[in-house]
Image (cartoon, one colour):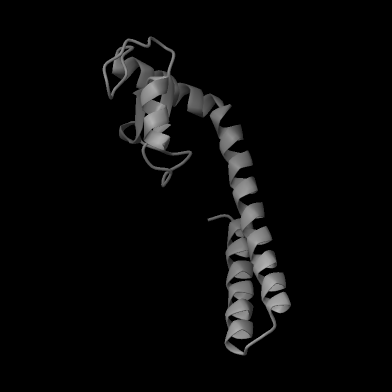
Length: 120
């Protein structure tokens, strides 16, 4: 895990502890809202940072090679419904646990309809 993500995790734990302590002590709602807002901002910043890294990864040559390998494996068919999609469609991550070093088995070539169903 990167040091910046560890920093976010540490700050979240500190703010969450402050929030829980203030709530247990019967703090006024304004104090709870301020602490909860800080926790929310921290989480939003973390999501924004991850999204930015993910988008950059999807533009990388490494992702392009994996994408082409998945297209080749699928034979130009959606791996869920079998619809012919050629090199179109989407390559879907079944998991983000190994993002950047994912195995081909963690990726699948899907038509737009199946990909939207997965994320619905």
